[in-house]
Image (cartoon, rainbow, N blue to C red):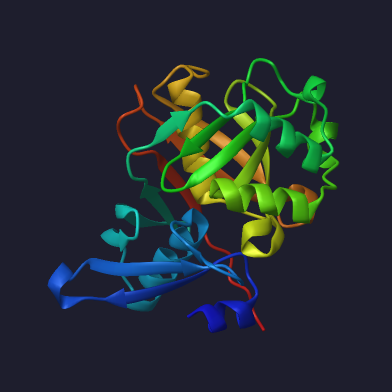
Length: 251
């Protein structure tokens, strides 16, 4: 699987297997970046279940056994397109060590004064760890030119999957970018796992009035735009729901 993922070269490649012991609508799934296995990947989950629904000619609910626990997924059809949602495992949000924060900012080439004070740095997890950093301007987010080796070394030591960089356009609309050096990728164009973690972050810090649906725009600065819809429930004990669709790639 690792070799195939390296040959494919995408941020993550998902591998799905059916297991009779799990039941008819339950599957096992594993995710690999070009250089390592990833515990959980949201956008690969969305793409996988959309492809599965297209192949089977039916939509509905499924359950996926991942290395971090069971993830519920749903598929449905709208205007001849299949959409999907996932509900993450129970999330956790915690403080980030100041030394780690300083190292991350240095590697990114960001100054602490360029952070949005209303969205404090945190580590958020809805399947794997993501450092959440909020830029105070769209221009700061757009100018992504970082030390991949330094940031990758820090993320490897702390077991962070991505650094989730965000800018708040409105109360419920955000723009995001995700450096992903542990996966051998400069930037991940779409990150459902990070979106779920970010939803948990917003709910935990009461930065939105939940229940609420949050929109995350990602990939625009890469020329690969996508939109993720994140449903933030009251409290921070249940899983976070992320919805989207898949874009077929030919060739």
